[in-house]
Image 1 (cartoon, rainbow, N blue to C red):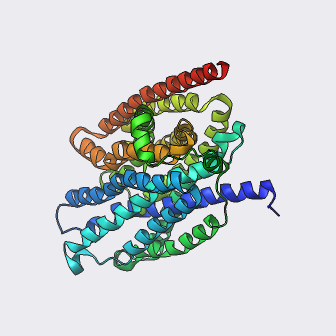
Image 2 (spheres, one colour):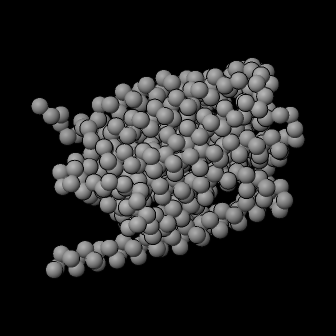
Image 3 (cartoon, rainbow, N blue to C red):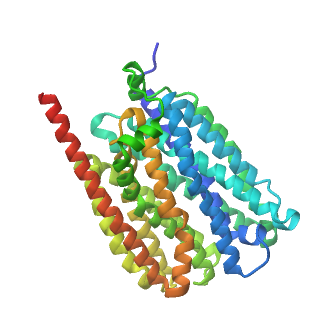
Amino acid sequence: MSEPKNVSTRRVLFASLAGTTIEFFDFYIYATAAVLVFPQLFFPNSDPTTAMLQSFATFSIAFFARPVGAILFGHFGDRIGRKATLVAALLTMGLATVAIGFLPTYESVGVLAPFLLATCRFFQGLGLGGEWGGAVLLATENAPKSKKAWFGMFPQLGAPIGFLCSTGIFLLITETLTNEQFESFGWRIPFVASAILVFVGLYVRLRISETPAFKEAIKNDERVRVPLLTVFTQHIWLLILGTFGALATFVLFYLMTVFALSWGISSLGFTREQFLPLQMIGVIFFGITIPISALLADRFGRNTVLLWSTALIAAFGLLFEPLFGSGQITSVLVFMIIGLALMGLTYGPLGTALSEPFPVSVRYTGSSLAFNLAGIFGASLAPYVATSLATQYGIQAVGYYLAGAAALTFLALLGLRRNASAHAQSSLAAGAN
């Protein structure tokens, strides 16, 4: 006897949310550690700014690994199914994260230390590259037509929840341990403890069923032999538009998190204990606006909400100097709230908007690749570029950088809108014939 549909739906949504929460928790604890401890522990003693930039370089490796993960896991996700692939992606990320917690430092093994750190970071990116697209499809391919964005919002919520958990645990450790204890062993605790979360995520994932859309694709023999080849030969324009359609989302988030934390505790004079709570308050607004944007997207259209959000992100770029650059706690808090609330507005409908245009047979590969290529162009170098711009030209230059990214995203979203309209017209014409 099959389980009731509402029970099955809740299980699917929880599985998509739990998995991305764990993956993003693992991903973000690295980002936080890359600012707080890795420059001192994994790189030779040198100029602090140089060490920070070297740490950011290892941070960026994951974003170059993510498209590889999108191709690898996307292939199997489109060939053998969403469920098994999501289990493999979670395992890849989980094992790499736990391994970081046991790595020797530069003082112990020299140049081998940053090499091992970079290797683990690569596998983190590989796992997350396969996770995001599968989790979004798990939700949206089980959704009723009128609630696609609402269902697609659940895996997106994993980002703010994962960030809150990762920042919270670092804040707790910072408050509990001395600086010496934190640098000696305390920073390892979140990485090792993530093993518990991975086991929970695997348990949940193993209890779900395959999506109806993929079952239908098998039934109709719609699967293709090499999904990546099909994406590049038949859907390349859609891939390009999707990549740049997500660009501003990535730039905004990593400016508000990694760059803001780094600049706040170095150039603005904040301590870790002062700045991390400001970020956590901002991320709460990130989480609040995700479901709001999903409701708006189901009512007014995914593309419409994304266009408005992107325009607001461009305008927000003008506030970097007066708010963040002021160095005042109240102004910085307002800056974090506005920026991360805008992040929620653009992030909520993004998964549904990127996955819907691709056919089921290549949807895992196509949507994952678009999202993760955007990570390369929008996030991998964002902390590095922003730090360089702020150092040479002032903090407002970082705001202009964000506004420029938003302009490119706005144009790409207009292209996606035209593509959707053309596809709808051709479908109507085919139906009439």
